[in-house]
Image 1: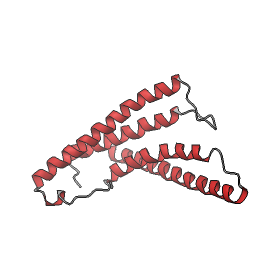
Image 2: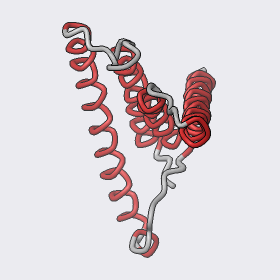
Image 3: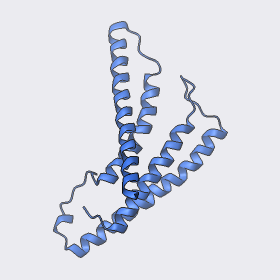
Image 4: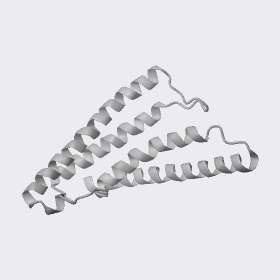
Length: 156
């Protein structure tokens, strides 16, 4: 049951990340086209691109953590004995788990601050707190994923 639920959440994060990337590409192409052909760029394109980046990156981190698809250079790691590999793996994943947990926790503070200050985007006037809510969800999901991979011993 846990595996199916996590698979669903990670797939949802992948869809969100890919959608944000597609929107960013379309916005950039439209902005460049408008600037080049009509000498009238889209004023709000950069703002929406930044918002999409706020959705894309944390979602992609959760997906990569779930699939074990992070980029790594293991020139030394591959020559270590198995016992040392396990220690290095647990240490590294522990740092990732701790970091993601802190980011999740501090995102709660950010939500509170953004709501209290009524922070909005400069051009479109969109509220900023939904992005922080998404940060809490994605960082929390990544924390759970890395913690369970350490517990299960899913060493890459």
